[in-house]
Each structure stands twice: as structure tokens, then as C-alpha cells.
Image (tube, rainbow over all chains, first blue to last red; front, top):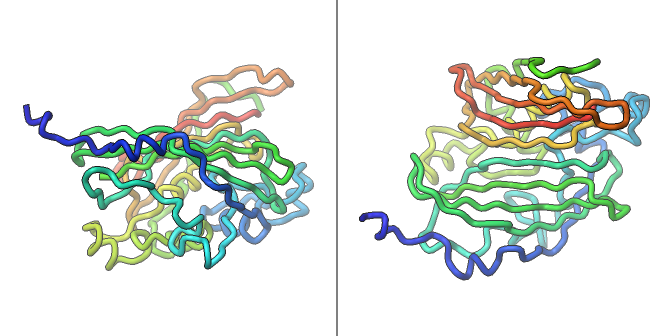
Length: 167
Length: 134
């Protein structure tokens, strides 16, 4: 039974972080950032570039294209220099064995209202679960996180569920 | 436009991925993980053959097909799994098929579509689902 020899990657210290809500961070949605994102994924619909077209389509300003939920405000004192988000918002306590590779396993976004240029979002995140699986790439640690985005009126506009794979 | 179960749509969402595409996405998203723009880091630190695209770039590209097809601003849910990495040189085709249509209760349809984005070898790189009020 070689399975028994495989040590669990999930430590008590990791389990203790499940459900712990992070400090909030702020993301801005502005016309420049919507245009940059839309351009990077090749949108040609004018609503993402031209405010008059967006307003004619019923939006307050340029709407966020699918997959874009604002840009974290960068502060060199507190932001992560690689990812732009809050520093220390990373994976948390380390698993029992160091895992060097990380993949984005998946992302799901539920939308509850329009998000448009001019909006300021506040997000908090927590780890929802840790799981481990052995697949073609060996022993993997799967972390599911949930991030809630509220707009400037305190309304929840989106919830993102993210799945990270470390191996 | 009324949608019905079985309706299909597909679009080539990116042809011949080059590092410029990946760098544009890095700038737009603020994600400067070197695995996505620095070949030396991708090979040396992690043993990958080269840089590869952000999963979220594939999600954004697939999302473009969704809003071009179903209309923008009415997405209720958009979820994907990243099933294979996307490498420089890849060409991606996003495919959608309507799997459910319900009455949204306001004269609109709540349309669920299954999504698969494949590379030039026909391998899926993104699989997911979107729900839109149309």
C-alpha cells in the first residue's frame, strides 16, 4: 500500500484559514482600464470603447467585458509587485511539502448587476476549501476561493469562485 | 432573437498567439507573473518549454464569443475550467451550444450555453458554461 506512505499536503494550519475573510481591497473600473482589457481580448463592439455607444446601449459608461472585474489600486507600499493585488494575499500557510508549480484551474463569475467605468469596487476573499487529488501530474493541491465584489453603493455586483492547482 | 436548445455558434477568437497578445493581457490585467512573459523564467524556474498565456486571457477571449453571440451586459454567470495551457503559435476557436432555455419572467429568456474552446489540434483549452438573460 504505497498510498499510505503519501503524506497529506493539507496541514492543520491550512485548515484553520478556511472561511477567514481577508482585509478588503479596492478596485477601480475606469474607461482606460475597460478599453485596455477589451483590446487585449479583441473585442470590436463599440460599447467597450465609446462612451456614447455605451450610453446608447443603456449603460452608465463603458461596461466591463466578461472576465474583467476592475483593477486593484496599486500602492507600492502595500501591493504585490507581480500581481498588482494586495501583498500577502497569496496562498497562505504552506502545504506539508513544497509545491513549486501553480495553475489556474478555473474561474466562475456570478453577476448581479452591471459594472461600468466609474465604479469603485471593494473585494474580500476567503478560502472555501482545500482538496488533494492525484492525477497525471502527480499529487495536487486544489484550493477553492470565493471573492465578493461590492460597488460604491454597497451592492454585491459579482462573486468570483477561483480554483488554484498547486503541484 | 429567440434562442432554442441545440443552437450553436463558434468563432475563431485568436489566431497564432504571439507574445504580444500575452503581454497586452498582462498589462490590461496587471498580472505580471513572469511565467507569462519571460521565457527564461518559464524554462528555468518552472521547466516549461516557453511562456504560456494567462488562463484568464482564454477566459476573456471565450467571453468575447459569448457576448458577440448572446449580447453584452446580460450575463448572469460565466464559469470556465482551464483544461490545457495555451502556447505561442496556438489558434483558438470558441464554440457554444444552447443547453437550456427558461422563461426569465420578464419577457426575456434565460439561456444556458455550454462552452468549449479548442486549439488548432482540436484539444480543449477551456470548458465552461454561461447563463445570460436575452
